[in-house]
Length: 207
Length: 207
Figure 1 (spheres, chains in turn brown, yellow):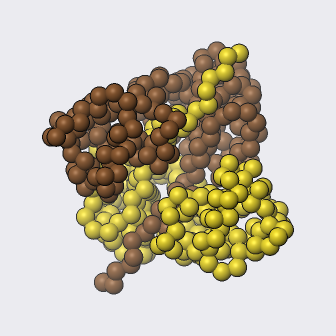
Figure 2 (tube, chains in turn brown, yellow):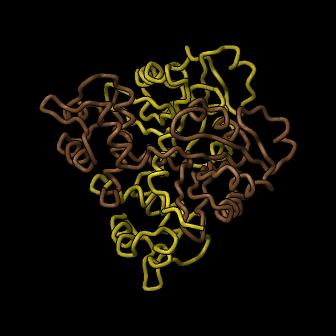
């Protein structure tokens, strides 16, 4: 997998999402081009990185086989446990996301600094006060944390997560985390997403 | 701006976020390398795309000038209005995000299909029933929508937004939107972000 370029990995992940939503029996690289905007040459090149049988014939690809090959090649078949840290509005919204209660990622715990909030919040998974974070992360082999704490607490909390053995952090705060050791961080701050969207807005048409 | 490669645009946006959080008076491409992991050669190349004076000297860059040059080059100086569509848990969390009530993006309205929800939800901005969407979007020149409706309603709602003249959609649903006409879409589905994080987790160390 190491030799797949980052942009190709990103496209393969998105392609998997597209295929999951299609539900057809065959798909051609030209149909994928129409759905995604990537050229069929790019699509075929990306698909060529995949291990194993991805159902390519002259008729096109079999979406189910292609999804399986993407999952296998990108090592997405491993079931992974994660937790939500910080149970404010965003954190509690994610606690209740349906998709987290089946499928490849399993939500197993929520944490908040406020013992009171942990006690009164309704949640489909157990909630714990923040001081129990390291204990619970180790006990349940939690690999990933959704970091939803207030901006000012993000760096300090991330350090504690790293010390507790978390392997990856999805960071929702507008904070550049500085962590020792091997830990993957992905930043998903909504204002940054708005910026990225806004630099790609279409030209204004005169009405 | 059209000639800046997409990955460089992405790095410049992130660099802007890094610089905003630094607060120092000078920063060198080597310091940026340490903070971001991009090579100093990449950093200098990215910065070379910027218009105007970005404060580059032998001592490094002036962060304030560099931020201004990035904003100018990427056309982020335009004040843009946006709305939240779908006021479930995620949508109402975003209604209340502090960063949306000052700064370059201005939240001006929220919409929900449920008239009841629109009436009882507490909100810092006016809320409207969904049938008023086109009218309000035009009246207040709203350019961008955060699409937070249930998955099954995403495509239909996006079509209505497009017809109402929205220019960009930040799509939080795991749905591949198909829209006629020129409209920018950026997908930010949390499970996809988890997938992207999980393919970059560090190798497991034996303890």
